[in-house]
Image (cartoon, rainbow, N blue to C red):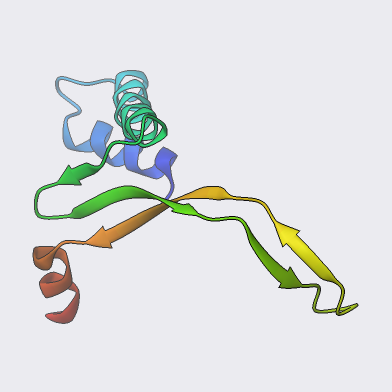
Length: 94
């Protein structure tokens, strides 16, 4: 499901009180806030769904698989998601 599809489903569910434009704005607002929290190094927990968090990967040496040349990979950050127990239960009961 894309962000656009999610906004459309929200607009359909609340068609009497919410336009498609407002549903899109709300969807963008939610995802922007999740992104901003992660950029700030915070965890984002959504009860019944899961947790988004940032990990830091240290600088490390690797080999180029094509040439075999030793290369240095810079330190970096990555966003991760851990599914909550309720989501995992729902996935396994279908």
